[in-house]
Length: 519
Image 1 (cartoon, rainbow, N blue to C red):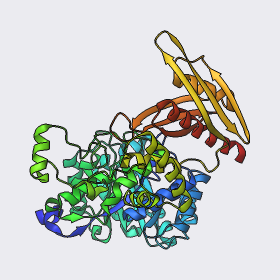
Image 2 (cartoon, rainbow, N blue to C red):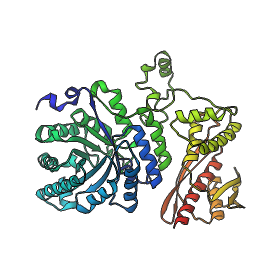
Image 3 (tube, helix red, strand yellow):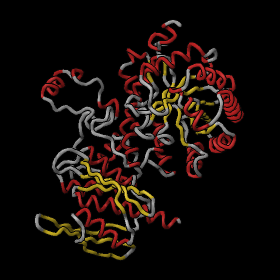
Image 4 (tube, rainbow, N blue to C red):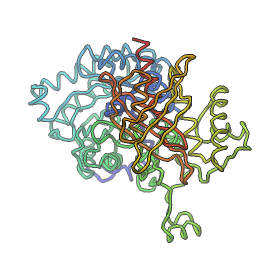
């Protein structure tokens, strides 16, 4: 095999790599990342605006909710191929097509495990049986639509001879994309690159299909493995926003996209992704799932473009490229904060919201503007992070607030018993209770809320972070509570941490109340 065939860096100087986003399928399988139908539709639209080529909307056979989500996305989302996952069996494939058939760009993604460990312990099938099952599955899927993806699950641990045989058979049966999954994150970059090169060299009909790669991050190498695959000829990368996914997650979309964009000199490839939408998409997913991005996360983390060391600051002042290989604007950060204050008007706020990636209705803008004015009276300057927090508090709350915060008082100190006095509005009635049974004001706030609402809550996760820097920054509280075996997320924003906590608890309580009413 010639070097020209194995290396994408010399093969096609202007290749466009397809981005296959599986945030709504593999990403949602991450513990704590489940989404409802409205949230999935909102995330799918954000992926279209981002420029994603393929959206894997779910696994239709998995549950009625998953089927409904895929069907609604297929019916309403335009601009990307909509994909549904199916095992290689008739029931799965037909169910996937039933969900996808209203999309003008449908894709059925069928998979079947091929590694020795899966053959022996999970499938209990011979190699020949697996090949026949793969052929039958791809043919059935192809009878529904032309765009068919086939994945030999655990391909990274599958013997090369057998992997080549399965791939060749799947392409002959009608597969137009062959995905090579590193299902358990076992591969290393040299191995992944060599596997793609091997398939290009040994599978005679490989030119009839796009080679894809789906890498997990169990050893922290999902992005590196995906890039190695691109280097050796892969034309599609499967990834998720913020790298969410099962166990340690998947290849991070923003990282692989910006690696290809920034090092196009090396990879000779790029994507269709509109990169200024990366940060807004990351923030949207964080708001929906409650799963925070670490400050030093590449590309979208708060510190990704922060410089504190004096030497770095001096270099940046002289020439930005001394210590920055990307511009913050390229991924959706603002180079500088536009400072708004109490004298700023609705137009300035609307413009800043638009720049930050949010489209607000007139009613939403009015509510955010009122919150903004109240905040501006409490602190001198309102920064982008504050505005984002206020907008997301409005956008990702609940449709109807059964319980509303009227007032609260909190007291604690050395040698003093903590207490919280809470007044909530339920319908047209205000109810007040004081709790001094907890270990601190946060615990008291939970207990007081339970007394007033009647909902017994078990706190599973509690996080506080600042929306901006500075001692007067907004505090953003995200929490997860368990109610009757179901985990519910809540979110609250305030300059007072206890108030933000009460708002987050009430946000979760109102979500519970919605579910109770529907049931």
